[in-house]
Length: 207
Ligand SMILES: [Zn+2]
Image (cartoon, rainbow, N blue to C red; front, side, top):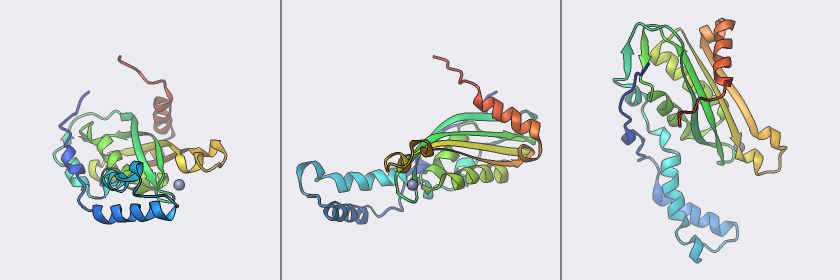
């Protein structure tokens, strides 16, 4: 079943980042760590980093209404809708290092469904901020619950945290799974189990 719609990349343009200020700060940072910001390889680094942040942190400016607008459909369908393995890239707010992984999002419609492409957009909106994984998981679930108003929402996020991997902490601590459940996924064990089974199955590949 397909409830798709257009993807509007424009809603991810970032205007709130002060690019000049970031440039200056990265220049100072390079100096502060003992580097020469004027040397060949680093000459354009402050500019590159500043532009990079406009993309990596573009999720602050996105209005959820803009993502969801026009993408809610009334439909007589009450089986679980699942979008799994949504790849995301975020930055942990403690170290500003990446955590990367996959989100699995499911809901049980109560007369309304949301365009399929919107769910990865919602994940992206929250990922492109300084985050902690637990909050990001909760935010995705909360937004779907309040906008789609389904019988329930389930979100599981699995991620690898570079701040753990790169800093000599035990490697198995680098992988983390978080979940947020609303409504029937929280109340009904069978529903929750169906969801967890579906996301643990091997992925189907079409090519
Ligand atoms: Zn961290």
